Each structure stands twice: as structure tokens, then as C-alpha cells.
Figure 1 (tube, helix red, strand yellow):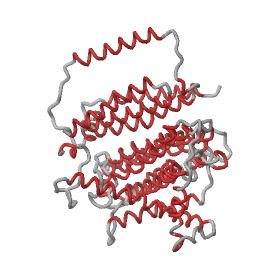
Figure 2: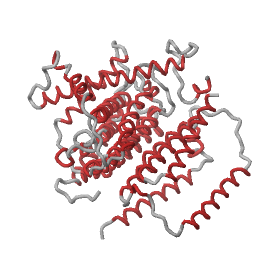
Figure 3: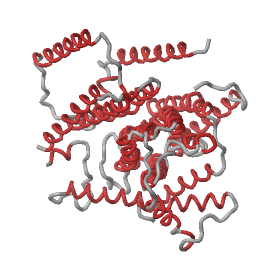
Length: 372
Length: 162
């Protein structure tokens, strides 16, 4: 079926199987299995990494008994959670209760389809790569909502409402923060964006990275935006009624989201697979690990925000900054395309610092609560 | 061949799920079926080489519209029982039959022009040229922006505490 290949999912000609007879399907198979196994494998390692790191930050050891350095701890946890009883509340909407974990998990895996691990080595080199990622990521909110609703539990509905309000608000700055990168790269395809990064875009777009990182912390419900599962307020969050494998799927979704957003940050702002000496995939994994460790660092450092502060921060701080960033970047690209990289980066950084100083005068702790 | 199969599968899903939206008593499930319908039509856009449109369809209709619909459903009572029957059934049937007739009639009688040109790749730059290029629709875009802005301000005014 040659016509299907022309529909967006063009495969790169510099892969060994691209001129075989069923090259397209072999490509799908190799990358499909590769992405899923890489993701699931790295989740186990990253859970261990996070628990060890948080242990270090809190001046304790973390899991260190199962296997060398405690590496088998996650495996033990997985076995424990898989053998647990699957409980469904009697008043739950059974069908939706059953589908919700799948709806939440699938888009997260799909997002990796457009991320290159080397030049041209990706599942589908879409012309609209970034847009695809944004579109797919918005479906996860639906899974969370379905779970919260179908559980027939007031805490889970409250949690789902909070989550959706938060996700919808932070989607806006997240999308707009990537527009600056798209303007400079001149393409929406992630492969092209990585190839144009002779200088990583974090140097050219510090403000863009700042917004992207904060907004993605909110999108994956990490501290300081983990209101979704604020234990002291909502018991456990939208997945309170879930147990066994269904709960494991939600847990998996959260970690996969964290990994996928680290991957996106590494690809869009840190130069992706580019780097000297080491093979491209190693560079990508290294950068993902660094971003993930940074997320864990933030988790063990910052306290949780209130819901009105979270919403106010998105709409009053991040959104104007993102629009300002787009404005300044497009002035540079449209009027002075020959601007040296250092000047562009410095201007961006100066705007970021000035903006933070300006707004910190307006936002005072203990101010009037914002109704949400 | 492959595109034909894809089109028919997606079309069946879209029609089936939109029929489900109407027939399903449970409002929450009806809203979820609406999401399936949106996704299927996004898939049809992909088979027509309109990848940008497909992504925008998912972002706006699934990511924003459907979630707002579900949020507003949560504010209604008796979600699982659907709308109660009343005496407006007959007029509603007449009006919707009229609308269906007008739609089907106009779709069948219009001579739809079919372009013989190859689909553009990438689609984004062509779209940008048409929308905000020189003989483009920049005025219409700006007017819709003003429309949206006035809607937002209206919502804020309505929500403001007296």
C-alpha cells in the first residue's frame, strides 16, 4: 500500500529497511516494539532512581535491600501490585471504569512516535510533529476525568475537576512556549527541530524553556502542582477506587508522562540526540535522565501550591510571558534574521529576569484569594 | 485501496458514535461518544492529507470542547437518566426533520468541485499563505479574534462577584 505511506507518516530513507518490500510495516513493527519496551523498561529504572534520589535529598538511603543497590525494588513492587485483587465499586459505571486507564495511558505512548532517537530514526516523521504531541497529550485529561467520574466517589470527582482545570490552563502556556522554538527552527517536525539546533534552543530561548518546564510540571501533576493527589485534601486523588492492575496503569501513566515530557524537553530545548563522541541514543537518554533528575530535585524541594495560586500563576504569569516571548522572538526572526545567537539568548534572558522581578512585586504572599 | 478501507472504517465509527450520542440516555457516556466521533473525523482528515486540520480538530474539539461539555454535564442533575420527556417532542421532531431535509437536499444537489491537484506537503506553509498571505483572509482572522475576546470579557463580566 504505497498510498498510506504518503499520508503523513513518511519513513526516512537512510534506515536500512526503507527499501525492503514491506519496509513500511517492518518500520512500524521495529519502532513500535522499541518505543514501548524502552518506555516500560525506563519506567522501572526511573521509579528506582526517583526513590533513591528522594531518599538522598531527605538524608536517608532509600530502597537498598532488593538486589544490588536496591535495583530490584521496582520489580518487586510490580509483582506485588499485579497480584492484588481487582476491586470495582458496586455503584461505579463499570464500562467507563474499565476503559479509563487505557484512555489515560495510550496517548502517552503515542507521543513518543514523533521523537527522533538519531537523524531520521523515528516512528513517523510528521510535518506537524509538535502539534501532534500537543493534540495527543490533551486526551490524557479525558482518561483522568473518566476515572474520576466512573468511580462514584466524591473525592475522585473533586480531584478530576481540579486536574482538568489545571490541565486546560497549563496547556496554553505549554503550547505557546514551543512556538518560539518553532519560529526559530522554521518547522513543526521534531526531526527538523533537532537538526537545526547547532546551538541548543535553551540558550536561544531561556524564557521558552522556563515556561515549558513549569507548564509541563503542571501537566504531569508533579510537585509543586500535585493538587491532583494532594493526600491531605483528597485522600489519594482520582484513582482512589482503583486497585491492582488498573491502579498500576495509572501509576505507569504518571511516570511515562514524566519521561515523555523529559524527552520532549531534551528534544526541543536541549539538542535531542546531538552531541560529540557518544552515539545519538546515548546522548538522548543522558539528557532525558538529567531533566528527570531535575524534576525529582524540584519535587523534594518545593511545597505544594494552593489551587487558586496554581490557576493564577498560569493565567497571570506564564501566559503573558509566553506571548511576550513569541513577540520578541518573531521580531528577531522577521526583522533581523542575521542576529547572532548570543544576542538573542541574552535578550531573552534579560526579558525573563525583568519579567520575574516585575511580577514578584505584584504577587504578594497572603494576597486576596482568587475564585476558581 | 488502503485509503478506501480506512475511510469506510472511520466513517462507520463516526456515524455509529454520533448515533450513540443521540440515543444514549446517560449524558456522560453520550459526551464520551461525541469524543469518539471527533477522533474519527480527525482520522478522516488524515486520510485526506489534511494533517494540520486533523491535529487542530483533536486539540480544539477533543482537548477543549469535549472537556467543557463534560464539565458542564457534571453541573447538571440526574446525569444517568437523561432528559425527561415533555410536550415539546412533536415540534422538536418537526424542526429537526426539516433541518435534516434541508441538509441532505443541499448536499445532494450541490455540484462539489473536486481539485485534481496533488495534496500539498507540508500543508502548514500553504495554509499560512492562504490565511495570512497577501490576498488572504487576515481581516476575517482578526475579526474572529475580536469576537473571541469580547466573548471572554462577557464571561468575566457575568462571573464577576457583585
